[in-house]
Length: 313
Image (cartoon, rainbow, N blue to C red; front, side):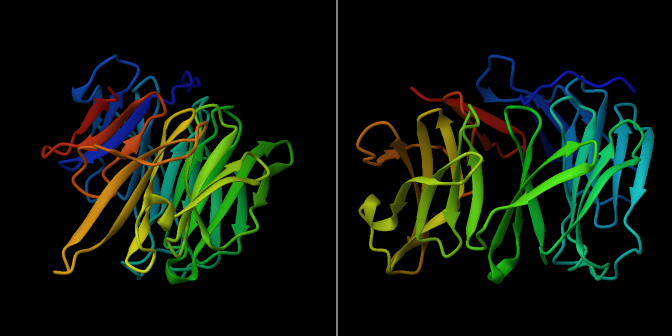
């Protein structure tokens, strides 16, 4: 299989049991229609998914495997996680396709699946053969991959439940996987800036949001709950948000009313100015239904399950 052209503008959603891909390079707002859909193999319960930029193939994870399928529904290859796990909850493998389309990165939360240590694996996207593999010192429930805009590096945030969150970055070399673990267990990776020079984290205890330089992780801006005009004893920062643009981040705060009704609000922060937060109308239905794209647009979810794309005024 020839490598697909890089395209960070392809996003996927699981809608009505099918993996759907949307081409964000199309200048459109409103509810998006899938550019291509794929039917998973019979019996597969999809927990993670991605697709190639040429829309010929989709890749997805189940609790016990990672699979590649064509748009015609044919299974190209399947890589099983051995042994199969008897644990049905608490572990959700995830995957991401490299920007050149050659490599599939797969996080395997094997410790929670009683399979052994957690694994981060890279597979040949064309054949499913293992390219590189690293054993991780984590006990994660799931992991979120972020592709660096430079194209060679992938970041992985691993959630360990009440034990915190661990952030890794990796690239491939002739020797295998070059792996770096950031020196925190209490920060959740949220987003990379559009130019890749910064990244955003939220304190695992949900007390603040911090922007860091990439790759070293030095903090450049930290905003705690009280910077948004809220009581830190009653309000927390949600593990969501991101970069609306190169110099603008969206931060999500939440809490409960006196009647114990949950609420959330999104705030916009200009990182070049005095950092004064302003309310941001996201149209999101919940704190996690907001996905900034870095180009002054963002996604929420329609009742149909397909994404809605909004543009800042």
